[in-house]
Image (cartoon, rainbow, N blue to C red; front, side, top):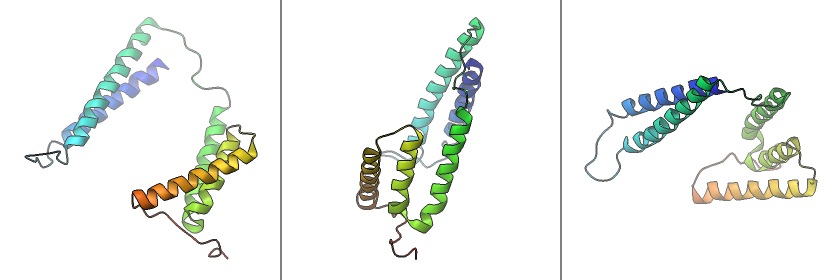
Length: 153
Protein backbone atom coordinates (compact mmCIF):
# COMPACT_ATOMS: atom_id res chain seq x y z
CA UNK A 1 0.00 0.00 0.00
CA UNK A 2 2.76 2.55 0.67
CA UNK A 3 3.94 2.18 -2.91
CA UNK A 4 0.46 2.95 -4.27
CA UNK A 5 0.16 5.91 -1.89
CA UNK A 6 3.57 7.17 -2.95
CA UNK A 7 2.70 7.20 -6.65
CA UNK A 8 -0.78 8.57 -5.94
CA UNK A 9 0.81 11.43 -4.00
CA UNK A 10 3.18 12.14 -6.88
CA UNK A 11 0.26 12.12 -9.33
CA UNK A 12 -1.67 14.57 -7.13
CA UNK A 13 1.34 16.87 -6.96
CA UNK A 14 1.66 16.71 -10.75
CA UNK A 15 -2.06 17.41 -11.17
CA UNK A 16 -1.82 20.38 -8.81
CA UNK A 17 1.13 21.82 -10.71
CA UNK A 18 -0.72 21.32 -14.01
CA UNK A 19 -3.85 23.06 -12.70
CA UNK A 20 -1.77 25.91 -11.31
CA UNK A 21 0.07 26.41 -14.60
CA UNK A 22 -3.20 26.13 -16.55
CA UNK A 23 -4.78 28.95 -14.53
CA UNK A 24 -1.92 31.42 -15.01
CA UNK A 25 -3.33 32.58 -18.37
CA UNK A 26 -6.79 33.32 -16.98
CA UNK A 27 -7.96 36.90 -16.73
CA UNK A 28 -6.95 38.92 -13.69
CA UNK A 29 -9.47 41.17 -11.95
CA UNK A 30 -8.79 44.28 -9.90
CA UNK A 31 -11.25 43.43 -7.14
CA UNK A 32 -12.67 40.17 -5.93
CA UNK A 33 -11.98 36.65 -7.08
CA UNK A 34 -11.05 36.12 -10.71
CA UNK A 35 -11.76 33.03 -12.76
CA UNK A 36 -8.38 31.47 -11.98
CA UNK A 37 -8.17 32.26 -8.27
CA UNK A 38 -10.37 29.47 -6.96
CA UNK A 39 -8.73 26.71 -9.06
CA UNK A 40 -5.33 28.03 -7.94
CA UNK A 41 -6.47 27.89 -4.30
CA UNK A 42 -7.63 24.28 -4.76
CA UNK A 43 -4.35 23.46 -6.53
CA UNK A 44 -2.36 24.71 -3.53
CA UNK A 45 -4.40 22.49 -1.21
CA UNK A 46 -4.00 19.54 -3.55
CA UNK A 47 -0.26 20.19 -3.76
CA UNK A 48 0.03 20.23 0.03
CA UNK A 49 -2.01 17.06 0.51
CA UNK A 50 -0.25 15.22 -2.33
CA UNK A 51 3.16 16.16 -0.97
CA UNK A 52 2.13 15.03 2.51
CA UNK A 53 0.94 11.68 1.16
CA UNK A 54 4.15 11.26 -0.84
CA UNK A 55 6.40 11.99 2.15
CA UNK A 56 4.45 9.77 4.56
CA UNK A 57 4.32 6.82 2.19
CA UNK A 58 7.95 7.35 1.23
CA UNK A 59 8.92 7.05 4.89
CA UNK A 60 7.01 3.75 5.11
CA UNK A 61 8.73 2.50 1.97
CA UNK A 62 12.11 3.30 3.47
CA UNK A 63 11.23 1.42 6.69
CA UNK A 64 9.70 -1.46 4.69
CA UNK A 65 6.68 -1.81 6.94
CA UNK A 66 4.51 -4.85 6.28
CA UNK A 67 0.82 -4.00 5.99
CA UNK A 68 -2.24 -6.21 5.59
CA UNK A 69 -4.28 -6.18 2.39
CA UNK A 70 -6.06 -2.84 1.96
CA UNK A 71 -9.34 -4.57 1.09
CA UNK A 72 -11.04 -7.80 2.16
CA UNK A 73 -11.12 -10.82 -0.13
CA UNK A 74 -14.06 -10.71 -2.54
CA UNK A 75 -14.28 -6.92 -2.43
CA UNK A 76 -13.71 -6.60 -6.17
CA UNK A 77 -16.93 -8.43 -7.04
CA UNK A 78 -18.92 -6.25 -4.61
CA UNK A 79 -17.45 -3.05 -6.03
CA UNK A 80 -18.10 -4.28 -9.56
CA UNK A 81 -21.73 -5.05 -8.69
CA UNK A 82 -22.16 -1.57 -7.22
CA UNK A 83 -20.61 0.03 -10.30
CA UNK A 84 -22.95 -1.94 -12.58
CA UNK A 85 -25.93 -0.99 -10.42
CA UNK A 86 -24.91 2.68 -10.64
CA UNK A 87 -24.51 2.40 -14.41
CA UNK A 88 -28.01 0.94 -14.68
CA UNK A 89 -29.36 3.77 -12.52
CA UNK A 90 -27.77 6.41 -14.75
CA UNK A 91 -28.99 4.64 -17.88
CA UNK A 92 -32.60 4.28 -16.69
CA UNK A 93 -32.98 7.76 -15.14
CA UNK A 94 -33.69 9.71 -18.38
CA UNK A 95 -36.50 7.27 -19.20
CA UNK A 96 -38.09 6.83 -15.76
CA UNK A 97 -37.14 10.13 -14.11
CA UNK A 98 -35.23 11.09 -10.98
CA UNK A 99 -38.13 10.71 -8.58
CA UNK A 100 -38.90 7.14 -9.64
CA UNK A 101 -35.40 5.70 -10.04
CA UNK A 102 -33.55 7.29 -7.12
CA UNK A 103 -35.54 5.70 -4.25
CA UNK A 104 -35.20 2.28 -5.88
CA UNK A 105 -31.46 2.78 -6.35
CA UNK A 106 -30.95 4.01 -2.79
CA UNK A 107 -33.02 1.16 -1.33
CA UNK A 108 -31.10 -1.47 -3.32
CA UNK A 109 -27.78 0.13 -2.32
CA UNK A 110 -28.80 0.00 1.35
CA UNK A 111 -29.76 -3.66 1.00
CA UNK A 112 -26.50 -4.34 -0.81
CA UNK A 113 -24.53 -2.89 2.10
CA UNK A 114 -26.37 -4.97 4.66
CA UNK A 115 -29.49 -3.10 5.78
CA UNK A 116 -32.08 -5.55 7.08
CA UNK A 117 -34.69 -3.10 8.35
CA UNK A 118 -36.68 -2.87 5.14
CA UNK A 119 -39.26 -0.35 6.28
CA UNK A 120 -36.55 2.02 7.51
CA UNK A 121 -34.72 1.62 4.21
CA UNK A 122 -37.83 2.34 2.16
CA UNK A 123 -38.78 5.43 4.18
CA UNK A 124 -35.21 6.73 4.17
CA UNK A 125 -34.77 6.28 0.42
CA UNK A 126 -38.02 8.12 -0.34
CA UNK A 127 -37.21 10.92 2.15
CA UNK A 128 -33.69 11.41 0.79
CA UNK A 129 -34.99 11.45 -2.78
CA UNK A 130 -37.59 14.08 -1.98
CA UNK A 131 -35.08 16.20 -0.04
CA UNK A 132 -32.61 16.04 -2.93
CA UNK A 133 -35.30 16.83 -5.47
CA UNK A 134 -36.59 19.86 -3.57
CA UNK A 135 -33.06 21.12 -2.85
CA UNK A 136 -31.83 20.84 -6.41
CA UNK A 137 -35.05 21.87 -8.12
CA UNK A 138 -36.02 24.86 -6.01
CA UNK A 139 -32.92 25.99 -4.10
CA UNK A 140 -30.29 25.43 -6.82
CA UNK A 141 -32.62 25.74 -9.84
CA UNK A 142 -31.21 22.53 -11.38
CA UNK A 143 -33.57 20.70 -13.69
CA UNK A 144 -33.64 16.97 -12.97
CA UNK A 145 -35.14 14.36 -15.30
CA UNK A 146 -38.83 14.18 -14.40
CA UNK A 147 -41.14 11.64 -15.98
CA UNK A 148 -44.72 11.18 -14.89
CA UNK A 149 -45.76 7.84 -13.51
CA UNK A 150 -48.19 7.22 -16.37
CA UNK A 151 -45.83 8.49 -19.11
CA UNK A 152 -44.06 5.12 -19.06
CA UNK A 153 -47.10 3.27 -20.40
